[in-house]
Length: 102
Image (tube, rainbow, N blue to C red; front, side, top):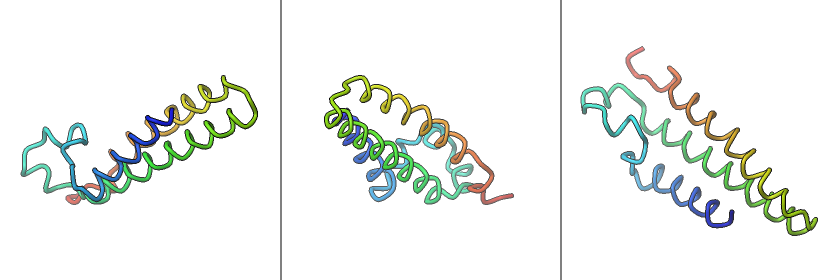
């Protein structure tokens, strides 16, 4: 879980600050004309925030599972973070909020 948390932090940073928008599925397959209709900076911020949030939840769960000596807690927190984070990314990034041609 530590590796996945670090991976999420790296991916969130690369997408937002490294401007690696090709990592965003759907956006990278759009034509350049359609890409101009979206606020990619806003979408990248959603990805960064969600990835950082999921990583933070996982790191807290990892620490709690070791501190409380409940190994299964690590799994529950991991899947809980994904269950909340992935739908949030999908719903927030696909909202009309980021379309420039409303």
